Structures are given as C-alpha cells and as structure tokens.
Image (cartoon, rainbow, N blue to C red; front, side, top):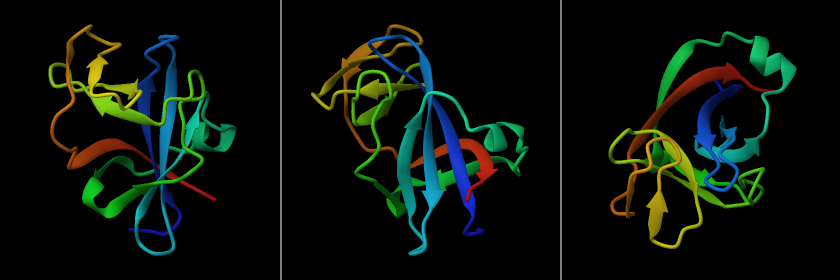
Length: 121
C-alpha cells in the first residue's frame, strides 16, 4: 500500500447526530493511525476519487493522540452489531447506535473496517 494513502470512514456523533469523518493515515512505520475526526473533508480529499473502497486490518493500527469526535470530543467509536454503521463512543462499556437505535454492551474487538481510500499529504 502506498505511503500517501488515507482511509476515510463516516461516523455519527451520538450527542449531535451529525456525521463526521474518521481519518486513518498510513504512517511511516507501516501502521494505520487513526489521525483525525473531521467535520468536513478537506477540499482536495473531497475531489479525490482515490482508489475506491479499501479494507484495513485494525490489528495493524493505533489511535493518534489528536483523534476525537469534532462535536462531542469522544475519543473512540463503535460499530453497531445490528446495522454495522459507526457511532462515536465514550468508552464506558455501553452504546446506542445513532443510526438504528440499537443499544448494547461493547464486546469484542474490531478486526477490520472498510472505507473510502484517498490520497493524503
């Protein structure tokens, strides 16, 4: 995979119900880094058609210190077990999916995610 690649994932904020974009960047040490929570995509990334959908193995990732939901400042997100969409998460063990309303206890670990592949600077 190219070093100048990013993967963008849409995530809903549980408090404001607005969509933001979680950005993973492929770092110099060949690890995916959850870098930013962006309210909007930068213009150059929005225009970039990238290479389509990319699948990322999360065993080869880490969360950067600057990542947070840009609306409520939660520092994580969870994938709903029912609809499979992403919602920001306060990391307290319980979640409510902002997309379908499913409520549950967080269990397990995400092994992979798919998102839009983009070029990064």
